[in-house]
Image 1 (cartoon, rainbow, N blue to C red):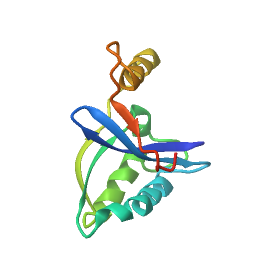
Image 2 (cartoon, rainbow, N blue to C red):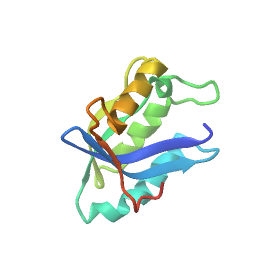
Image 3 (cartoon, one colour):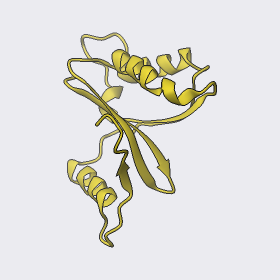
Image 4 (cartoon, one colour):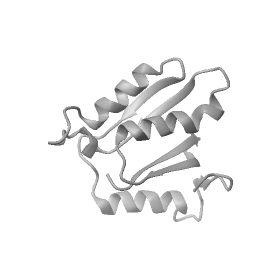
Length: 127
Protein backbone atom coordinates (compact mmCIF):
# COMPACT_ATOMS: atom_id res chain seq x y z
CA UNK A 1 0.00 0.00 0.00
CA UNK A 2 1.46 3.32 -0.90
CA UNK A 3 1.01 5.33 1.12
CA UNK A 4 -0.64 3.56 4.02
CA UNK A 5 -2.84 6.11 5.80
CA UNK A 6 -4.71 5.96 9.10
CA UNK A 7 -6.28 8.47 11.45
CA UNK A 8 -6.18 8.42 15.24
CA UNK A 9 -9.34 10.11 16.43
CA UNK A 10 -11.80 10.40 19.30
CA UNK A 11 -15.56 10.44 18.86
CA UNK A 12 -17.72 12.36 21.30
CA UNK A 13 -21.48 12.78 20.79
CA UNK A 14 -21.13 12.20 17.05
CA UNK A 15 -18.29 14.71 16.64
CA UNK A 16 -14.95 13.42 15.40
CA UNK A 17 -11.73 14.89 16.79
CA UNK A 18 -8.67 13.97 14.73
CA UNK A 19 -5.64 13.65 17.02
CA UNK A 20 -3.02 12.35 14.60
CA UNK A 21 -2.64 10.99 11.11
CA UNK A 22 -0.35 8.15 10.13
CA UNK A 23 1.08 8.35 6.62
CA UNK A 24 3.59 5.61 5.92
CA UNK A 25 5.04 5.42 2.39
CA UNK A 26 5.72 1.95 0.98
CA UNK A 27 4.44 0.29 4.14
CA UNK A 28 2.28 -2.56 5.39
CA UNK A 29 -0.18 -3.24 8.20
CA UNK A 30 2.41 -4.72 10.55
CA UNK A 31 4.49 -1.51 10.33
CA UNK A 32 1.35 0.60 10.77
CA UNK A 33 0.50 -1.33 13.94
CA UNK A 34 3.98 -0.69 15.35
CA UNK A 35 3.66 3.03 14.50
CA UNK A 36 0.27 3.05 16.23
CA UNK A 37 1.91 1.55 19.32
CA UNK A 38 4.60 4.23 19.28
CA UNK A 39 2.21 7.14 18.72
CA UNK A 40 -0.24 6.13 21.42
CA UNK A 41 2.37 5.61 24.16
CA UNK A 42 1.88 9.21 25.33
CA UNK A 43 -1.80 8.53 26.06
CA UNK A 44 -1.57 5.24 27.96
CA UNK A 45 -0.40 6.66 31.32
CA UNK A 46 -0.38 3.21 32.90
CA UNK A 47 -3.89 2.25 31.85
CA UNK A 48 -5.38 0.47 28.87
CA UNK A 49 -6.55 2.67 26.02
CA UNK A 50 -10.03 1.84 24.71
CA UNK A 51 -9.86 1.41 20.93
CA UNK A 52 -12.47 1.04 18.21
CA UNK A 53 -11.03 0.02 14.87
CA UNK A 54 -12.72 1.05 11.65
CA UNK A 55 -11.56 -0.15 8.28
CA UNK A 56 -12.49 -0.98 4.77
CA UNK A 57 -13.56 -4.26 3.25
CA UNK A 58 -10.49 -4.36 1.01
CA UNK A 59 -8.24 -5.39 3.90
CA UNK A 60 -10.31 -8.55 4.40
CA UNK A 61 -9.03 -9.92 1.10
CA UNK A 62 -6.00 -12.14 1.04
CA UNK A 63 -3.27 -10.93 -1.25
CA UNK A 64 -1.43 -13.42 -3.37
CA UNK A 65 1.86 -12.33 -1.80
CA UNK A 66 0.63 -12.78 1.76
CA UNK A 67 -0.44 -15.78 3.78
CA UNK A 68 -2.55 -13.77 6.20
CA UNK A 69 -5.30 -11.24 5.64
CA UNK A 70 -4.55 -7.66 6.68
CA UNK A 71 -7.24 -7.79 9.37
CA UNK A 72 -5.68 -10.94 10.81
CA UNK A 73 -2.42 -9.02 11.21
CA UNK A 74 -4.23 -6.19 13.02
CA UNK A 75 -6.15 -8.57 15.32
CA UNK A 76 -2.97 -10.49 16.17
CA UNK A 77 -1.22 -7.21 17.00
CA UNK A 78 -3.94 -6.16 19.45
CA UNK A 79 -4.00 -9.69 20.87
CA UNK A 80 -0.31 -9.29 21.76
CA UNK A 81 -0.91 -5.90 23.40
CA UNK A 82 -3.89 -6.49 25.68
CA UNK A 83 -1.91 -4.79 28.45
CA UNK A 84 -1.93 -1.51 26.45
CA UNK A 85 -5.23 -1.58 24.53
CA UNK A 86 -8.81 -2.62 25.12
CA UNK A 87 -10.37 -3.25 21.72
CA UNK A 88 -14.03 -2.41 22.02
CA UNK A 89 -15.04 -3.18 18.44
CA UNK A 90 -13.90 -3.86 14.92
CA UNK A 91 -16.10 -2.11 12.35
CA UNK A 92 -15.29 -3.57 8.95
CA UNK A 93 -18.02 -3.69 6.32
CA UNK A 94 -18.38 -6.69 4.04
CA UNK A 95 -18.27 -4.34 1.03
CA UNK A 96 -17.06 -0.76 0.72
CA UNK A 97 -19.78 1.87 0.22
CA UNK A 98 -19.85 3.67 -3.13
CA UNK A 99 -17.34 6.52 -3.46
CA UNK A 100 -20.14 9.09 -3.78
CA UNK A 101 -21.61 8.00 -0.42
CA UNK A 102 -18.20 8.19 1.27
CA UNK A 103 -17.62 11.70 -0.08
CA UNK A 104 -21.09 12.86 1.03
CA UNK A 105 -20.55 11.46 4.55
CA UNK A 106 -17.16 13.16 4.86
CA UNK A 107 -18.54 16.46 3.55
CA UNK A 108 -21.45 16.30 6.02
CA UNK A 109 -18.95 15.94 8.89
CA UNK A 110 -16.94 18.90 7.59
CA UNK A 111 -20.10 21.04 7.30
CA UNK A 112 -23.66 19.80 7.05
CA UNK A 113 -26.63 21.52 5.42
CA UNK A 114 -27.27 23.53 8.61
CA UNK A 115 -23.68 24.80 8.64
CA UNK A 116 -22.65 22.60 11.59
CA UNK A 117 -19.15 21.15 11.83
CA UNK A 118 -18.65 17.76 13.48
CA UNK A 119 -15.09 17.01 12.41
CA UNK A 120 -12.27 18.79 14.19
CA UNK A 121 -8.53 18.49 13.65
CA UNK A 122 -6.17 19.10 16.57
CA UNK A 123 -3.98 22.05 15.56
CA UNK A 124 -1.02 20.45 17.33
CA UNK A 125 -1.51 17.12 15.54
CA UNK A 126 1.14 15.85 13.17
CA UNK A 127 -1.05 16.37 10.11
